Length: 270
Image (cartoon, helix red, strand yellow):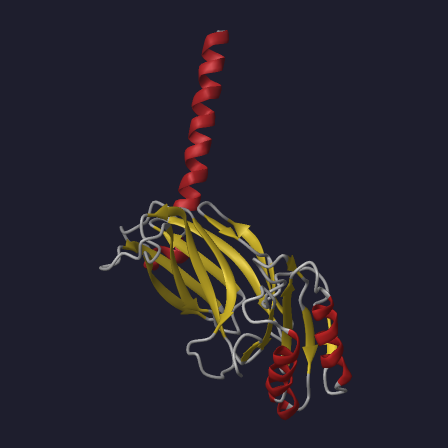
């Protein structure tokens, strides 16, 4: 009798698990989007503002998709199909795309897809498996909340938007000339049109948060401006300061990154 009871419990548990899987795999709201194609890798994703050219332009909001699996070429891609259902973005994964020409470095397969500003829900479909997230997009940040997931992971639950008319001051120095970091930021702050600000609360900052590879990687500073001519004149200010204070190839770097893809560098004539 005891063995029969144990066997009954095991069968009940298995049937319950299968029932749960069927519920995940057969969501009737998405039946029309389900196809036989699927990919084997799990997917990481994050919202990201990018620039489509090297010219001055406002950033475009995208959803970056990244496989957890690493491939032998850095330029593997992801084939997806997107559907818009009201304020819901539905993303169906089709296949991994092997490049015709292999860029010889390992890396994940990646893809960028459009993320409409009015999106309030993102649904991912891989074969018959469905993952769902709610999403809020406002002028300050993008917030992602898990509803249910089986094969996807949100890398950043909160991501800040580039503030309009803003820029980042990014500086790296050697150990014996760290004053360059504070000296040039003081020059920036002498201009009343440049007001320093901080990204408040939790979230991934879209600007570089520090330099990388210098002996001293200083934390970035962020500023807003009201006059674009004053901002553009920073190029001349940087040229003059760099010529007088930074030895070429000395390992000291200053970079200015603007919200609309304008960049100034201390090691070139801007």
